[in-house]
Image 1 (cartoon, protein in one colour):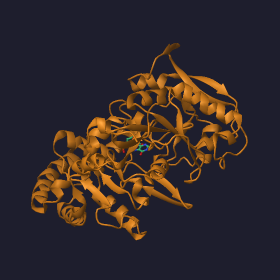
Image 2 (tube, protein in one colour; image 1 turned 90 degrees about the vertical axis):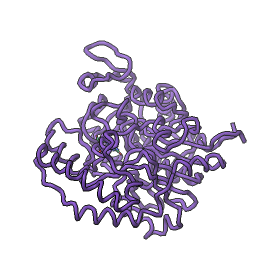
Image 3 (cartoon, protein in one colour; image 1 turned 180 degrees about the vertical axis):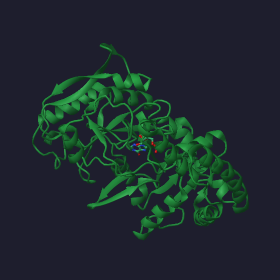
Image 4 (cartoon, rainbow, N blue to C red; image 1 turned 45 degrees about the horizontal axis):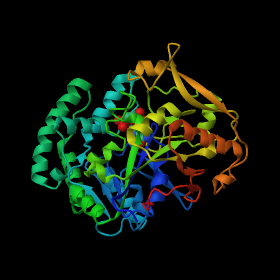
Length: 437
Ligand code: IMP
């Protein structure tokens, strides 16, 4: 067994919804610790275990495995009411039972009711130019963090201090809501009562998660970092401004979880065998036709958080190649290959043209990206069901060719192949937790 940290990050390589819940759940069986490190309850990680569907928004998907300690790191923005609701639901199912089974960073910022109100009011005001946010207050909470006007879990543990700070901040936020967004002022008394109540219940979970993780990694524990959203929603490297407000690549693990960058050993990047996107913004391979509708129907492509229909299109190697490069992805977990069954021919986007010229990479300006024309390669499809296949050899030749070509285009191998929503509909071709080499 080679020495070094036994850590794996799982991140989305497209616009989110790649199937992180399922893959993280699968890998969590071998993890001592599972960590969320960015985003908030804009995420909706769907898991299907024994035919039962569970959607996790804030608690790491490791919660379905009793041996795993779940950690919510300082880079996550937390809506305390949503977190407690999720904890209650899991506890009612006998999960997250022991003390210490869920730890929350004292440095994590809190999503407050005015963040949600501002998020939603701004979207209404933007009208047609809306970003299509989840309306959960994510952007305004991260704004306050950067503006140094945020409130953190550490503040919530001190009721008197929290009450004083919230009163001051809310006065400003109410002025902004009223004067700039023509919204109703929010009531301080009701807000503080609910938050202090949440604070009392969360208090036993609020700790220095960064030190906890450092000790766990040094002790040789296996740690899984669960990314949220996807690389193209990254606030720096995504399709700005149609992005979320956090960094979503593997680089965010260090800051968001509070571990040194070199403590991350391996990166698994998740990609669908096609592409989807919720919310507005450029999407060159989008299919606005019957085929797009078919992918939506067959793939159950409706947002896990908001229920919105997802936009669907062909696999885009330009997108995934960029994400692989930015996050140093070791292997791909390819999901929903089964959804492509029966579509013939299949197309893969292998390049872009802008104003008739071939271009390298993804344009930084959203208007340019919107005008990009995809260059496609066609491959033969297959018609046999693949949902029961347990090895690559059992896949039709055309499906094997599709996967092989995709690997070639993005430059890394497929290490995990998923052919259905269930835990057992997964081929583990290379185990990310195998650290023997
Ligand atoms: P926000 O994160 O709610 O501010 O939304 C910003 C953009 O990111 C919108 O296009 C959302 O649809 C998208 N988004 C946020 N979280 C997710 C996710 O977990 N999956 C897919 N898209 C997301």
